[in-house]
Length: 167
Image 1 (spheres, rainbow, N blue to C red):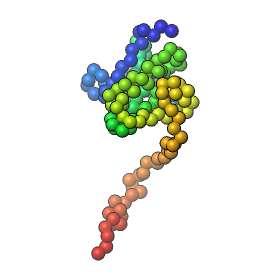
Image 2: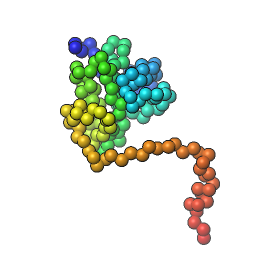
Image 3: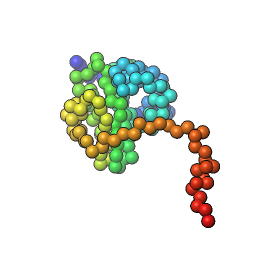
């Protein structure tokens, strides 16, 4: 496959008025790409994607003309830890080295390339990531399936009273 026309874009921010931002108008394409290609991300809402992207740096997209064909993002403190999230290349373009280049582009970003450890979760693609240099790490396998707390269930007055020691 000739991929010379494929473009990789590194976005420093989401939805800003800068040249390197991921635009709000790209969200429907992003959602469609994940609905088709990523079983773990089906059913994500556009509003939730917006929040995730606002808190991600960098965001890397892959384009064939006007068609979004690849995506990855990271979160990082810039020094100690980073995590790569939501790596996907459309199946029509897999096997041409685009996935590797996508992950390497995220890893080269200044917000990621200095950290001590880069984490990544994957269900079925361990061999792909091992070829890039990731290692299976059984010591960090804990997860909390968080349930958002409803504010009404927490009575602030009760919490404040229990925190004050009686004389």
